Image (cartoon, rainbow, N blue to C red):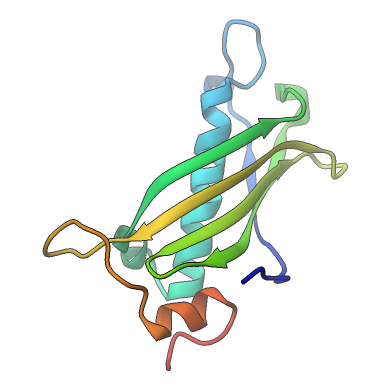
Amino acid sequence: MEQALSAFEKRIELRWSDLDSSRHVNNAVYLSYLEEVRSAWLANALGGLESVDDFVLVHVEIDFKRELTLADEAVVARCRLGSLGNSSVRTLEEIAVAGGEVAAAAEAVLVARAPDTGGSRPLTQAERNALAGGSLSS
């Protein structure tokens, strides 16, 4: 079920500590930026940060398109729904610079976690509605 929803965006300032010895943003930091926007997207859709703990990242793929340096100053990280499974959420994500050029494109899969067992659980209808851009109430 492919979605055509608009992306949730978060502006992230680049920090000196994000750089590696080559003076560009370290590749692992790109994943941190994506985690930041993905968590904010989930919290926004599901009504709070506590709901983010109900999901676990099980897969992430990233294509690096261009390096980031301190000269870029900030990026806009975007996250949107790709598809919903029985217990999984696939997101489409990207990091772009001020002019709109994409520095990285990614896809992630999150699984809803049962707090009592730590295993996966089916998404509730309310979660499905909220993640698909509707309301959290069913």
